[in-house]
Image (cartoon, rainbow, N blue to C red; front, side, top):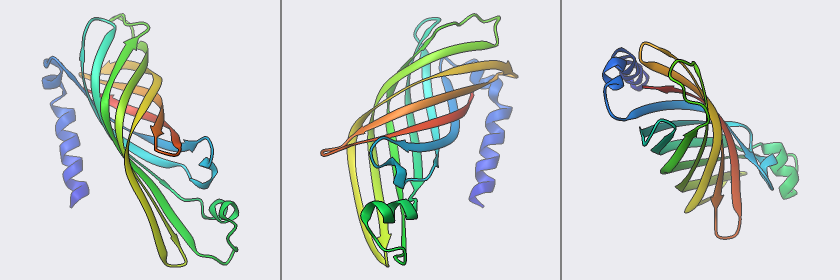
Length: 193
């Protein structure tokens, strides 16, 4: 039932894209894959993320916006066992999830309206709520915290079809925890209204 409601909302947004074209702001829905990077990243499998962005144009090339997203990655149990020195018979599972929200700036390197190719760079700051949960032989260990972080990336805005545009953009995100930094990369495809 929840999936049906989500599908109806998405179809409504596509049908009303001409309405969004007249508003002074833009809305982007995106989804993609996430992968941890840096020290300790080998214990996490690739995951997914979904996001919602609202932004306005400050001039022809500079946009300001706000982003909210959810990312999740599952534990690579064999790598975790090796890293933690656990026996192969140990049952292990786990996940990393993060909610993030915060402002960002986007600068278009090329923004001619008669073109279907608009490369851009982005940079922003966010507040991240992250949670790591690991189950070892039935015992659960979890750790959650809220930390500041940075996000940066580049991308391409492609063409227009009935008031809807497609974006392809990778992000690199850094979460600043008390005793460590957790980094992850995400590659996304977005629909811009």
